[in-house]
Image (tube, rainbow, N blue to C red; front, side, top):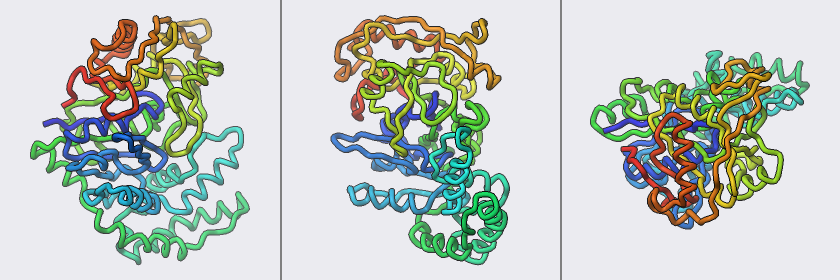
Length: 427
């Protein structure tokens, strides 16, 4: 049975939650392997809409075990709040597993995140201000606090004091802010310990044993390929690795155990936050995509920047992730346009390229080269098979598949759980 990675092939917000949820009834484990509560998934089940920020989408599928892996940074207050909200709506959350090696987001991480971003002014990156970056920075600097530290008060206090020794100097002397009390931070974190303890487990061992036993394990990435700290549009990126390689380090599973890598690809392109975006629209078409597609951040509520489909980015995602399949989402949003532009290349200082520039300055100056495909006006939300789609919609999908370098195995034709066309099974 397969172990699959499912990830965003653009700048995030591609509809990973729906794709994960679609597979959730067929898999045994769904694993978040990176990011924190800066990532959001909207999942529609019947007439119910669920906004998930930290929890894996598989938590909505009975029989599926949701896992928060060691590569995730966990804000304990957000985790418990999200669990409580689902429990109040009748969702069983008892199967959740949280890696003891996952790092915690503390109150001082959020303080530093917001303060630093304000200090940067026009040079700000566009973070969510939730402390994700500072938590990952502490992890790399080896002054981070892990979930397991909640259960040893002495170690927890030592680690908080070590982390705040330098940070308080920065807050007071550089930002003119009050120093943070280590004791107050410790008391706050210790208050979460008993509520979280029952979920904590050796998730690496559990997942490897599950794969060896023939269970289906789905690794769910947050954000998207172009927000990867190594392979994205740096520095306008997240602080972790949403790309396929991140699933191995963020869950403790070797690459030889991954059978399939599925990229989620929106039928147009969006991004949140600052940074280059060659196909971005500033006209009525951009506003129409935003309005029809409901392009507002699940976690932040920020307007998403909208643009036409970018095949250069899709090909890049195929390459750096080793994608075996695409799940194309939100095709229905494009209904009504007479013709639909698709970016097939960039022009940079008079030179045409079909590959993503590795040089940051070149990407900032890239201008899209468009081909125009005929649109359709028919309602496609009731389509159950590829043949049910209008001819022009079929042609659009086939063109994107050819340009992107991997087969499109599923198509989202509406927001509902059942509004999906499966062309090839992922399992």
